Length: 170
Image (tube, rainbow, N blue to C red; front, side, top):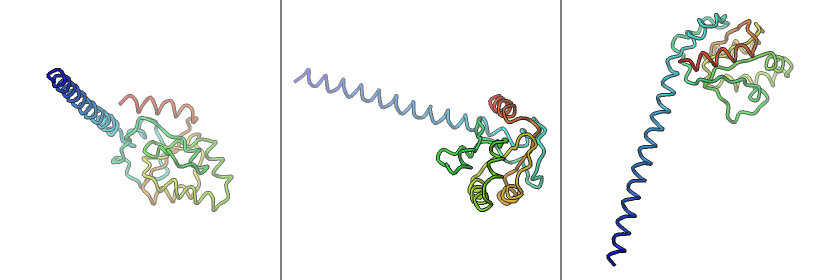
């Protein structure tokens, strides 16, 4: 009877330690997640414009207040093809030759539909590489949603690598 009482007390003590450890780990993990997102919140779209000398195709949009909260970029080829699950819309969107050719070869109504959905998300910015001109629909839809679009002469690969390094340096 006494040994059973000791075992129950010991088990209760172990459970308390495990629970405290789990609570501490959860608080620490949430704190790290918040600080990581806050860390990138220092980067504005204007910082990216200045760093890469991007040409604004939507100059009426104020980029000083648009924050980039992720240290990664997204190439939205899958989204343009209709797959929206796992869309990294909080990241800068990079459109290269493949995405732009795909868009221009779509039927007009299909392109409008996919772009309408694409620009319905709160995207921080869209950067088109190789100075490829975006479609007029892209400019109109982006402007209506306050999403800046930029052009750069950089190749898509060069832009991806440089921008990832820049975002990860903050």
